[in-house]
Image 1: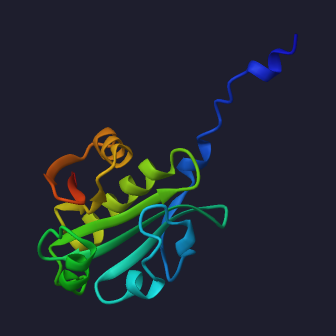
Image 2: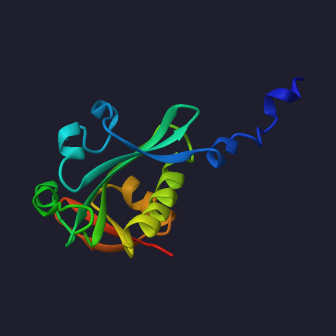
Length: 160
């Protein structure tokens, strides 16, 4: 019997410690499982940014954010409410995905740290789809459900 086959790999998540949050100019929008219809131009125009979780020159996770002064209910509202980073009081994470297990949690943690250090923003809100997967992800990662809308839901991540 080959016991090596059943041996747990305890080093599986070591890569997370060496990963870093980087700002991206563009992504492959087809990789976005939540909002693939949004162009790179939309994601990087006034008041919006793309961040990636980088490890060994590879992007392991992506989060797109917009700076606003209020909480949007739809992507159209998000587009209309987006404002320059220095004027925004709220950071809205409107799409987030990962290519590797553990990257989603790590990218949110790094984003919260970035917002605290750079922007003096108190919380990061989400504009998430109404899916059990999105709900489970945000609750499991410490977010609080703020509002359920007709097609989306908003969660809040407090910045410590």
